[in-house]
Length: 226
Image (tube, rainbow, N blue to C red; front, top):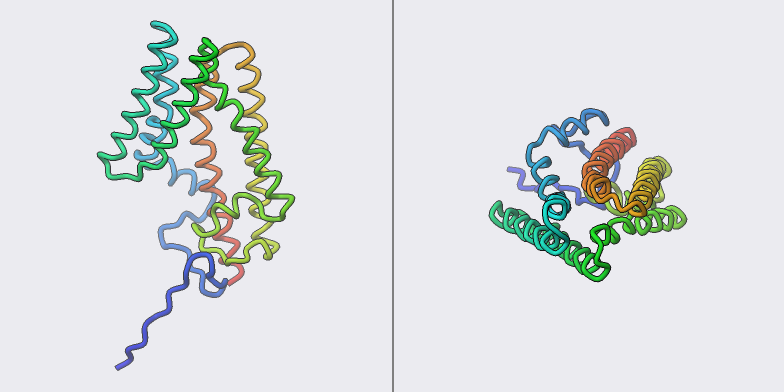
């Protein structure tokens, strides 16, 4: 009787010859997008993430700044409660609470509703800098973030095709953030908090789509190199 155990490759150190795409993995970018957004949980998660901004806008229009800040904080805490009740990781909800707290402080200090969106308006600039720095270092940011998810080799940045895929994905992220930053700066200057809230809420779905397409592209590249 053969008692030898099968060797299971570990993510991050998987050689190309050992890589296997999961049976239910989408085979094209469009299939990845459909699979990503056919899951109702993703829509709920997007709504939970956008709830503080939407609550702030609604209450600020109906009442005033400080009740709006309270409504945003309440929505963020409710989002944490939802994740705990669903036994999901509370990390993103805790980060959301921290962001809402900072936004609330800025709004309270400035005394302006648009102050609530100052930090989200600045975030795209930070992302652009991180992306550019990673490209200069020849380790595009999407590779640093997604390599373990896709089961790529530890030295993925030394493989020309993989690096090219992540270069394209990271460059796309830069382009998205440039557009996002321009929109938010323009409407922050105008004090249009409704557009700011929509732009902030749209960020999550846009990048979830980019991640889904990037994962498919990387897996197809790895499969060709088996």
